[in-house]
Length: 254
Image 1 (cartoon, rainbow, N blue to C red):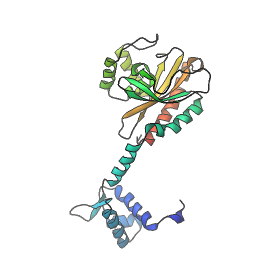
Image 2: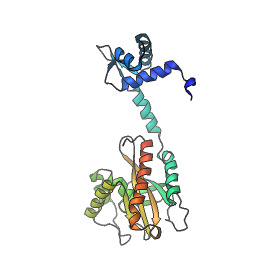
Image 3: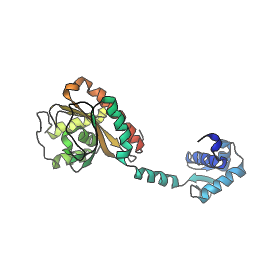
Image 4: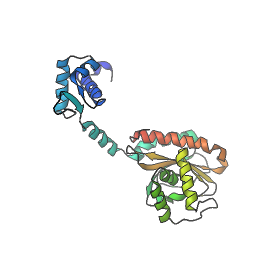
């Protein structure tokens, strides 16, 4: 919308909302100074905003403050966000950048569930499908979720899981597992170094929402023939950046 299409009174009312929101409480004189408007104009706009529930007068004073109406409206928008729909564009970009398979998962009990997959264009790739489940303890996405959750939750998930030596590289000791989660949290990404499937390395990062809760994770899955260990940090940074984009769309503030 170009400037000529705006309504001056609405512009001014929104400007007042912006000023008032920056203060615990503020008087008309200070609002006038901040916006270079006369008191009559500011008073009329304040009255309109008060009548619509956006601003209230502080009891026993001539100062004003914002109500929770804007918060309620924003919170409704956040609650209506759909993880899959919000994540898809970023996942597509990540797959296009790396030319590798990208997954989006959520947790279900002691497992992760693949809810979206962007397939690699390469011939050799990981055999997964939407709806497939894997134990959290031996997947990069599962470790990414647990590393950014409470330690008690990680221990509980471990204790409730059937710990199986799926490959020679699968972690089967709780202390070793918890040590790795500390490293995951420090680096910001997790690794499945052939722990689930021989010949496949995965790198994953968590997705967080506005309440700072982990609501899922994303990963890149790459055959080891195309993924030497010295490139783990490169792909780790790719998944971190992608998770930040998605988390910000879901209201997370870094």
